[in-house]
Length: 219
Ligand code: CA
Image: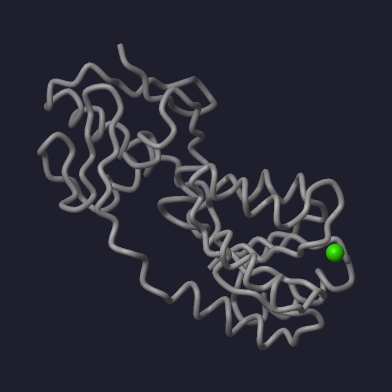
């Protein structure tokens, strides 16, 4: 499990990271709102913990931008402002949970685990790019059956068409953090997906950008 913790109080951030890592949870810290937003938008985390009062960009703004960009990672908001209106306001804006500062780390860990365990809403969405349609309700691409991993990879490309997607991003997103250096997983799957795209007679194609990653384009 990998968590992003956006927190400008360094001592608190380090203490929380230490306690979470003892529970086997990997933690990336972002010390300000800008870095927090960039990391959150990478969409590789199982949970994002957002302090509200931050330099550069507030936790509230990060949450708003994440949801605008369709990053649906569960978010826990932290704040010393414990008024009920603040809590309700953030839950309305798409936060999944809210914890008042000061908090006990065990409480935060329990909340993180509860959110990550929560089954994701069944995703019946269809995603389209050009003449390609991924139907996630039955895991098909233009009617052809895909494996679970293929669905995850195709989703990344269809959600970010004409955008460079690095191997590292795909690895972290689809295989998790324990697969460093396994670039050949990505290559193997990309070649399978290219073949699938050809077999459904689509005009779209995945091009390799040497040393950087891949892009889905309409040819
Ligand atoms: Ca703060």
